[in-house]
Image 1 (cartoon, rainbow, N blue to C red):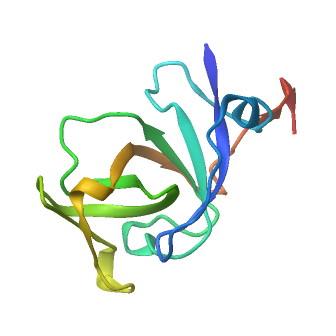
Image 2 (spheres, rainbow, N blue to C red):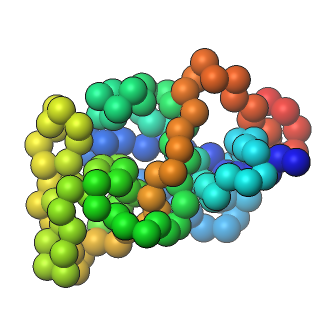
Image 3 (cartoon, one colour):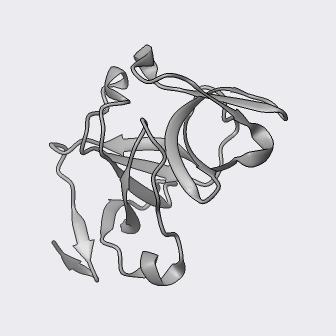
Length: 141
């Protein structure tokens, strides 16, 4: 059995980006086919090289779930003032969040924890050469 999750757009580790998560927009997005046991609820296509040290290259589909046991040292989708960024939660406490990238190719972000929301945690990825199946309105692309 397979399940389909929305591909919500392109994501970045270097800079914040915009993404529309309203139901109408999500409904029209292409869908990535996964095994039914996978817990991911959305996919974002990585559009930079910030996770290359983890073996995740530009173009890979990052798979996210809304929660995890811990956020520390996990790849996170973080929202601040309506914009998003994908980073590793190197340090998170009630006052501050430090978000980094492996290899420090981009400088760490020190953010006030009150001004951010952890939207999702990456729980897998699919590289472009891994046999991706994408559906558009229930039809194969």
